[in-house]
Image 1 (cartoon, rainbow, N blue to C red):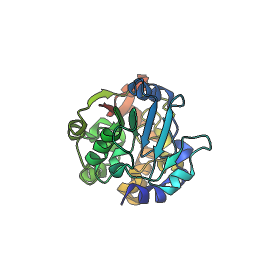
Image 2 (image 1 turned 135 degrees about the vertical axis):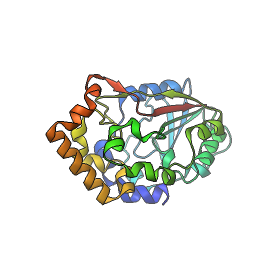
Image 3 (image 1 turned 90 degrees about the horizontal axis):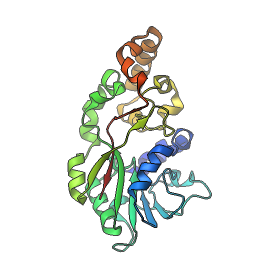
Length: 247
């Protein structure tokens, strides 16, 4: 399923929980350097678009485009793998939490490299499902489906555009409700609205989702979750595989 098809199905409530976190935004915007013109690829509803630069967005899903704010950057219908721009049209190109949905991630990044002088990509390295308690203890299906979802490793993506990597700490009170955001607020995953803001639950299927929710609810009530994850409760931020690729 293409990104457009996926988010035309899943994305109806995306703006309820998916917002710009200012701390993550500051790291992304710093990575853009002095760029004045920025292309946002797979832009969704417009999170993380820098307000002080000239931004043009591309997003293949009509439903996602329809949820962009009135004052958001102009947005065209286009896919990452086929960007309708001349070489070096932009100072920088950015992509946030989108590469894992592209049909050909390497081709998409190479297109970003073609149309921009600088590339900044925010993604998650999920090569170790055990790094996050939700996939480790409640969603064993995630390890099985990684092969279907991850079409290129982080090393391959970096090599494709000559990028280096920077870790992005996820704050405990992250404002952006991506899958790993509630690592210190486990009760949030019991909320249907929170789960609908990420695509992983659709990928694992309703049976796995409901089993995970039921097990987590029981472990929170019994205190088992706290016993297993007590060390997390002292952290203000965690490394859960979030990375910036910068080229």
